[in-house]
Amino acid sequence: MGIPLSLLDRSRTRQGHTDSAALHQTVERARRAEAAGYRRFWVSEHHGVPGVASGTPALLAQAVAAATSTIRVGSGGVMLPNHRPILVAEEFAVLTALHGERFDLGLGRSLGFTKPVREALGALQARPREFAAAIEEVREYLTGAGNITIRPADTGHIPIFVLGTGTGLQIAAELGLPAVVGGPLLRSGPEAFDAYRSEFRPSSQQAEPYLIVSAEIFVAESSSEARALAVPEAWAMAQSRLTGSFPPLLPTTSLPTQRTGRQDRYVAESLATVIAGTEDRVVREISDLLERTGADEIMSTASTFDVAALYDSDARLARAVAAL
Image (tube, rainbow, N blue to C red; front, top):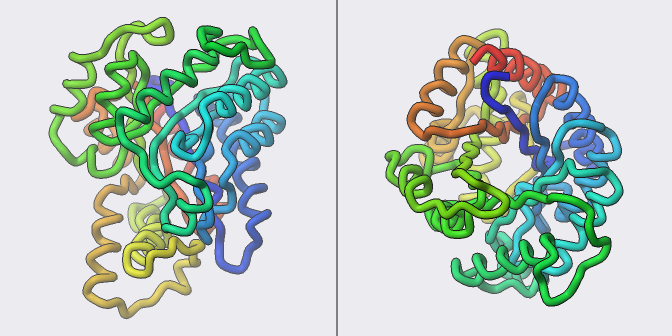
């Protein structure tokens, strides 16, 4: 591919389907992504969320790695406030020992969505400096520089990526690590991205800045079909803002046709960040995104109710981006 293309799958649950089905869908999507030529396939961490089936990235990454052979597998991400750094390092060392140097360790600092989840995890705060210190501790364990030698030892290189907002970019630059950004930051000016590059301190892992930008990307036969694929996720996001609970995906036929003003506004805000259309249109929008951000890699975070349509969208996206 002209520019590396990757996928993040959140193991989204769907109305009328089991949580187990969502996990099997994640593994099947990874198989298809590998065949289509994607560089990475990442899984996420959410706890106690009705709309997400997995809270354990390392376990799900193990299942993905066992079902594939060449694609890089990673976390997008492991939320460090929920874990001791030594345990994170050990988990990915085990994965690497079993499956080879195919793993990416994406680290974030988001807390649980609700107070009961945060209390259950014992993660009540996530200050930026504490996050940076925890990343450094993980890196020391993985490189053998920690005060304890983790086992298995000498498993090979496990690259760390920093997920985040503007603060995450600052930490990534300070530690000399690649960064992954998406959401509202992509709609801002280039200042944050320019600062990441100008303030980047080379490290043993990363000699130069490396930026992955993530976006929901849908490709279909027509722009209207592609746009329709984005609506179930946009509705779920709107519901989470209104009710505090992130729900399973609904089929488009079950989505309400009459919505309140606030529902309409939240759906529109979610759709505003989506890239959706035919191959030609999506390539133009991705090219614009690359120009605005100077990104080195694109990561699609698309989810929709129709799994077959999602697989088709992924395949179309891979073919389209290959021409860039």
